[in-house]
Image (tube, rainbow, N blue to C red):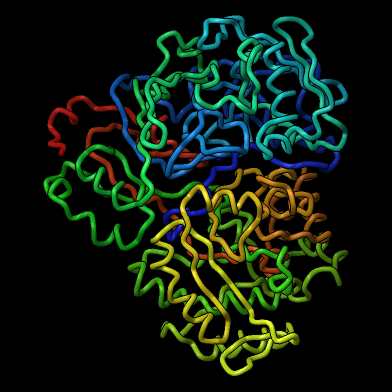
Length: 626
């Protein structure tokens, strides 16, 4: 695997399943229909696969499109330890350091996901997968033609090494993904068996079947966690061509890529070279785009979108500025108030702080009315609760009465709407009342507790745009007596503090899997991830009722039950307000030099333009860049 929207914690696309201790692997209706002891070409969490065993390519691919050329971009999403501002390692599989985005394109997994299905994966390195009779194990037959960039064949021993290494020493999110891995065995050179414990749900197990495979031989004289100055060889479409730490990296398509004509690969990754540019600030990145150094740019700053795309290339039509619809997957931009610090542990405090953000004023005066005020951490998906609970939702939350806010059983929480003045006195009176109920009172101009200690709130960020957008919010907090401030630090210091949970409040944006799993939900909202370094439970929340609803979502055996469980979870999360939903958008605002071809209909669940688009030579010849 976003903002009001510029540099955030990590704008991640979390498509891997992530976490631990899952719900039982229950043979529900859809799962029970998956045949056992039969080689299959794909698996799905719920329902049928869209693509049959004889599929020739994915519908969103373009096998008829030309191949070649180069795309230059500054990325807008990334995963694991990657950073768009700088990089100092080529190892993306550990927590330490900052790796370059798209380094994952060097690696294939046993299976891979489809961009136009919410929960399907298809064989990649593996030519078939067989589900065991007890439905806890998966046996893979590797493709004989699969090769690493070194020329060595991909063997079952390499798969065993990769899974064992990532489980023991990989990035924390990968370790959590593999926590319920019971055993992995090389049956022979081309066959590997993976088995999970009975605690692993089927959906979570599928999330662990697409992890990157590395060559064991490469690490014969190297320590996994210390590899970083050179790229770990993979079997994927690309290899590292040129790079300069902190400035740029180029990925070159492998001429000997073993899978270039196979269905899961055909018509994708059409550029010969991908060049990623790195900028610590958004303004130099925008200027590079204006000069044609960058050829595609997704804009997350409202002011820039409204006022800074009037340069000559736009006027003459060489640069296209347009909006694309967003994906059908849960996404959020939220504030995290660190409950590891006692003053943020009371939900009344969190509600009070949220009331001090005047979205209506901010959107009108700073964001050119381009944004929406998000209500949910599952914004943009079918998992957003509405109105009062349905009978099915009540069946899940009624047993939790007394352990969840009583308001959960009524209308779902929605954002307060201000009068747009920038200083809505009615809302501020409510905020002050909530602080008082939580044990904080005004002493002159200071909000203090019984011991006379001031309520301190520091908003930690590394983005100057966040200072511009949220300065008014911080000023409003000061007006009601908080010792509130913004601390701007460099990206490396910021990420180090986030990894150590050393902050009062941060802003974070994520895109979740379209089929959330127990593991993925736990990593963001579960007690198990509260103190796990590298996890995304930035608020430090730990609540048994939330864990129960996460388990219900993980145990769902059909999409209707999953949706019900997710909506019930949404209700509880929104009334607890561990994550404070913030500014959102339901579109991509993108500008690009008019040198590309692409299909107008984009896939529903992912939009990696560098994989889907291609260079149109005729357009490129007529465009005046620079």
